[in-house]
Amino acid sequence: MDGRHASGDGTEKADETESSETTETPADTESGLDSALRRQLLASTASVGALATAGCLGILGDGSETGPRPGGPTAVEETTDDTTPNGTATPGGPDSFSIEYVVQEATLDVPTDETLLDAGLDADLDMPYQCQVGVCGQCASTVDGDGTELVEHGDVGYGEMGEAEFQAGYVLPCVAEPRDELSLTTGKQDELDSFMAGETTPTPEETSTPGGVESYAINYVEQGDTIDVASDETLLKAGEDEGWELPKQCEVGVCGQCTSKVDGDGSELVEHDGNQYLSDEQLEEGYVLTCVGYPRDDFELTTGVKDEADQI
Image (tube, rainbow, N blue to C red; front, side, top):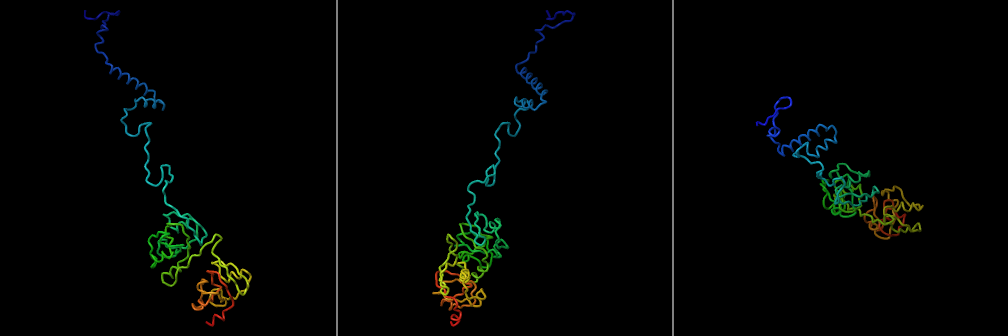
């Protein structure tokens, strides 16, 4: 037999056993199923949800694409400044010190990487300045101690200002950064100029007390009373505040009408600011000018002795 038989309509039909000469392998079957499933899913990917499903099944790609895989760890962005990834400051930043701006009557915390001038101006303090680079000297100030220890200076090009001036307490706030707590008194350019010229010594800083500046017991002999006079108040003004009539005229240290006498060396017991009348000898003998004289100790004061002083 040749394996053929007649069908009902007279045509020959191959034997089913012989028509399956070519058989499908398991791999071909699996490939066929994958292809069929791929076509079925791709035909129904009109929605995002279906695309996501296809992706999860690995149908839309073989996993060889570059870049982070879905659900994989997210790369951490590197930071190059002193902040954490969320933008907050990290510990260990610059220190800051409490700075008293005496003339401006303010106290600020100033970081070690900020100049005393910038900190004051940022706080809207009225401070003298001009060049802001340590050249003009307009911002010259004093600190209550050795300037080489309390501040760190940048470049200073003002006159002959150097180590001696810094040690005496003179600083330039425009190029000075704090290294400790300090009191800063601005407006000292003229005084600095005199110091550099060798004409004066720095004015001693007044010692503060809990109630304010230092004060001294002054016995006004002619007026018959003893009062406390602050170190930043003249002997004349203190007496007038008590209602006393004290001899005076120019009130600027020129005429000598207010000349008085203390029980000791006038150059030690009283600090003058603008004396243009009394000589050094008269001062040593105890004569002082109350209009420009500030107490630096306790003493007795006798007013109205101009004629006596003129005899020396």
